[in-house]
Length: 321
Image (cartoon, rainbow, N blue to C red):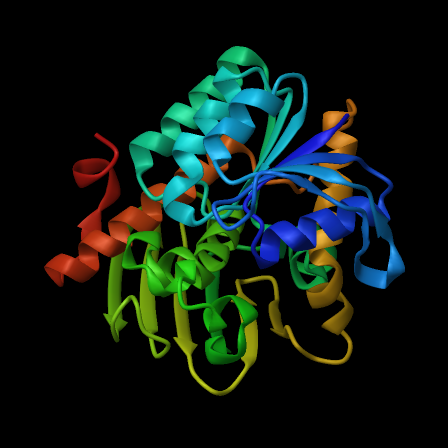
């Protein structure tokens, strides 16, 4: 199946490189920073030759012209994910991979999930930390006990990210949700995957959502049992420690350790390989479903509301109406 990619930033380019490594064909890419022309073949990551593709400066035109019967990857700024995913479905795509977060607004996420189900679209959301071996090979495969408690503490040196260096970086646009909808969305997704749907959220954020120094503390109370604490900061340091405790065992992972470093480097590729198997008729496996993506967006929206109100937000009462 041919692919089109919406968004030619760092993540879009990473997807193009991985598809090249997997000998898959990317026929078109849409991004406002591209000229309307053919992009000549070039060497991608690891010396893989990427074939020429059609470029569109209007992503929506790219979707209208190219999506039919193809796989569409949405790798644009987060605030565009919902509308572009729906456009891809309306224009006959056969498969859809939406980068995280699935959308900014919960109602958009539900509309996308419902449309995928209605039209039989093979779809997934790009929560690639599900493929980090701390989760995929350890916690998810081990028999767990009662009263689960997840703690994830992490820092990212956002100032050195290539995407942050750009004056028009999506990270600098508060409408894309800042640290909450970028880094924290991974943590929320795994918390839900491990402990189930969330009932209530308390969120505190320090710093401006368009700045490089943001800190978020998120407490999740899960509907069935257990709770999760997420502490994230953007600073000059880089670390990520995932701890999971229940009555059966305790797991603690340094996500950037020598042992787990290959996971950080390869989880995008492992996710794409799983997506390829899924759209070719295989099982979904660890891929995040649109319904699960919607659940994560509900929690993120609740966290944003909690931050604004400075109080606990009960999801079913105030968000999922």
